Image 1 (tube, rainbow, N blue to C red):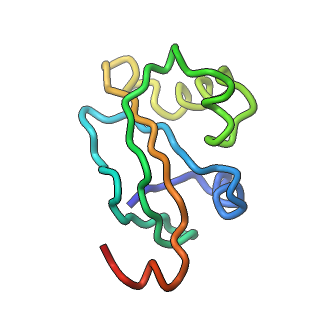
Image 2 (image 1 turned 180 degrees about the horizontal axis):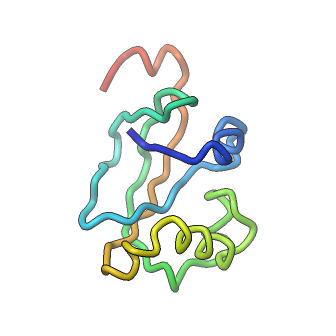
Length: 107
C-alpha cells in the first residue's frame, strides 16, 4: 500500500502525479507489483529507481506534481527530514492507476 497526504489525491486522480519519491532503507516495491492507494484504488508499479535527491531536476519534479526540483526537495525534507539525515535511500516509484477490469484481476 502506498499512502499519500490528502492534498495529493486530486493530482493522482487527474494523472498529474504519476510518481512518488520514497525514503527506504532498501527497495520496498518492484516493477509490475500491484499496490493500493486509499482514496484512489489499485495501481501498478511501472518503475522503481534509486535516485539522489541533490541530482533531481525540474523535469524529474513534474510527474511528482511539483513545478521545480527545489519545491520537491522542500516537500521531501518536510516529510522525511529524519530519514534523510539517517541516510535512508531515495527511490522514485512510477505508478499508474489500474482500470476496474485490470484491478480486479489481482496480482
